[in-house]
Length: 173
Image 1 (spheres, rainbow, N blue to C red):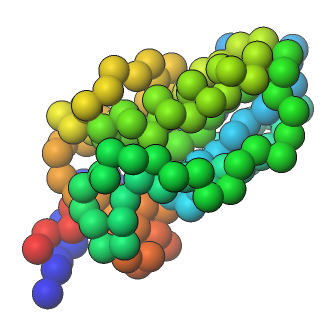
Image 2 (cartoon, rainbow, N blue to C red):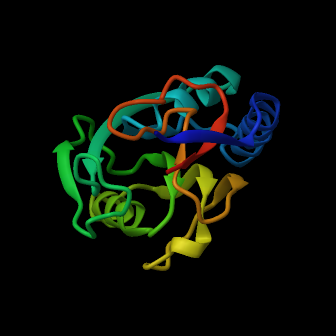
């Protein structure tokens, strides 16, 4: 039976999301950015973030996967499950993701979007796990940095469980 150990409280997460929203509003002042969220994990973070953005925005989602069912490590291969439905040429694009660990998924998405000729392209992630990095990837906005644990909660799951938890937890075997 697995147990959960809290890593970041709801209050710590809320403070980080507020800070990120303030940074985004400064950098995109006078613009109408397209925020692209990575489903399913970024849903909770993206919802919290966009509610704090006092500016015009457009929203789009993609669904990517690099974990197999029940896996705690990336397979290293990214699968596009749902792609973009919006033209992004000439747009200011902000990719929004839940966590970056290996960097493989974010690197894949950045490369994909870059080929579609956006005016600008930045990445915003709620949680960064640099100890797992396999691919160098530029993150423009980082909420919180976590240690090398398998984490769940605040949108992140294990076998589709735990997404609804308001804190971030280490899933201990």
